[in-house]
Length: 171
Image 1 (tube, rainbow, N blue to C red):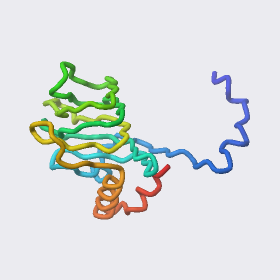
Image 2 (image 1 turned 30 degrees about the vertical axis):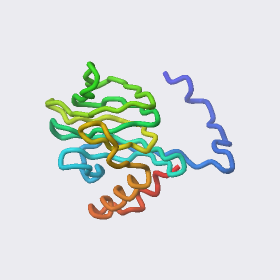
Image 3 (image 1 turned 120 degrees about the vertical axis):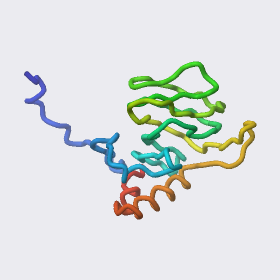
Image 4 (image 1 turned 90 degrees about the horizontal axis):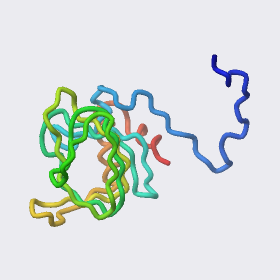
């Protein structure tokens, strides 16, 4: 029996200036319209976006094995593997479903998706920017929350979900 059934909800849930939570049912959906393509095989489902903090949460998906990208993080990143198999060429671990990774600020790596029956789906909490790196590890561009927003809005408009769906993720 659920002992809490007779409890009454708190009446003052949010402070006067607080925004409501972001609730996303079936966050790791297989409906590809929700995934914003980065490349032919890699895409991202936005779940929460903070323009003021240059931060976002997403599910990164790779449908097949291959290079996702090379990048440097000036800030920390958290990752939780939902499905598939992935890792960094610079480390000796390989992540599969249920694995958690904390990436320290100041880390550069080459993210790859490995062959696996299931697509790579990883929940990331990213504080930007990401600094894109060339094959020698030298900077060749960056990606931050503002570029992420523009990419997401354009894709959501293209697939009929509407750019306003992205605005609802801002906190």
